[in-house]
Image 1 (spheres, one colour):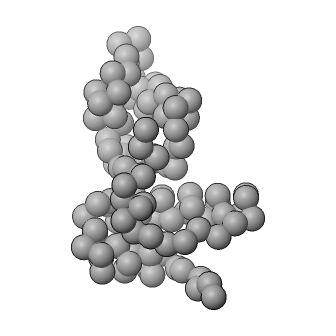
Image 2 (cartoon, one colour):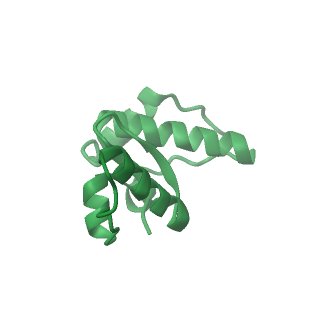
Length: 110
């Protein structure tokens, strides 16, 4: 038996598991939307497992990601180019889920 999960259900599950601070409010919406798109694209249904999601996905500022993965941003002319360079790097190496209004990127860890 499957249950349809809304964004609020998704957020509630993170809170019930003590993981409400793992992602920002907006970051959880980005992750939720990405999972729904993947399910639609592949015709599958993802089982909601908060702990697995917390282990597989992360939300970090693009500069922190660049630092963590030694992404060279020295030739970028502005923040927009830096963000695009980090997103390109993630897309080449993992799964990019989306970006928040605070320039935090939600992605699958690698």
